[in-house]
Image 1 (cartoon, rainbow, N blue to C red):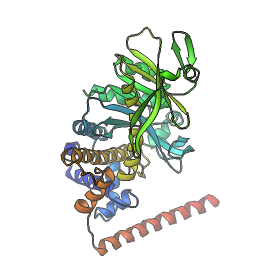
Image 2: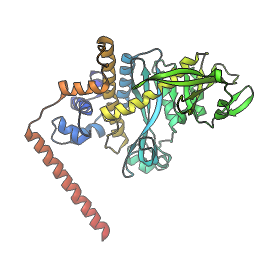
Image 3: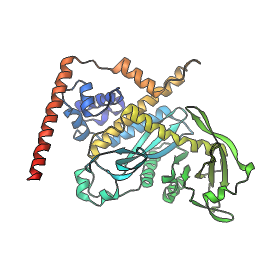
Image 4: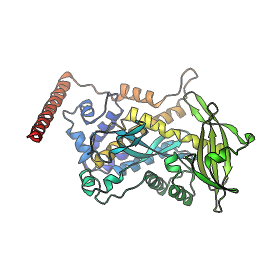
Length: 412
């Protein structure tokens, strides 16, 4: 918290931000302004709401501090930047960026809010270093709606690959190095993103659809058609990295693409050894690299899924109950900081205190449990709990009465 202290003009929001971050790490059934305020010993959630909505501090500057913190402690010369989006299912139409759209969280089209994240994945660990809210075109075409949600009236629609390009550029422009970028089909199928990375000399391994067309010496072919032309001897069994149940072995093949521009370009094909299911990747590197390197980068993409799982489960990344953009950006930035803290502690513990053979190394889940249990668990008396209970019931009574009055007015 000392790293971001200078981002706050007053001591009160700085101290409340610290309590909010600890509350995000607490083992509460659900983290929001109400529950965290009670956990922190505050009588009402008004202070937490003020911190997220009206207090003077710059969430983007704190985001940059999180990036510096992650790179400093998880630095790896072979680190991969992984980009992906995640959705949070929402009700109503007032929450910034919400509309009916596909979200992998639900696995279908739902009323949801989607954000794109950039994760720094190295050998020591991984954590998010940037975030961008996806604002659908239905919002950018309605200036009044944008203004009501705290967005600029002139907010311009940006696709998810454009948001990814923006975040990668921000990372590199800050003076950091990353030799590779990985992502799924949403990003691999976008030629502008691929061109932007090539112009910076940044390698990539980006998934593409089976219908994606590439050019080889014999002409242009779909990826799935080319896969049928790969001879048996060209397939190699390689691990895409260790998972919870051991190494993830697949069969891999690579095809060189025809392109007069400098650099090495390939189509990477992955085949499941059990089902035969195929996956395809567009690859670029400034100089030719072994197949094993491309496989390692392709396997790094799963780190972003691990971040979403642990970021939501351990740091309440998805439990924000806010409607305006300012509050959203502040909540997710502090949640990124909370998760980065766990990732850094995990990396340091693995380096300084290797686990004995009979124990698995400390996980982020176990570190969070120990940290909140042994160090930061606050104890409040029964009177505090009863005062908070009375405040909640009083607030809910006012809200209920307001709803009833509105309903009666609409029926007359």
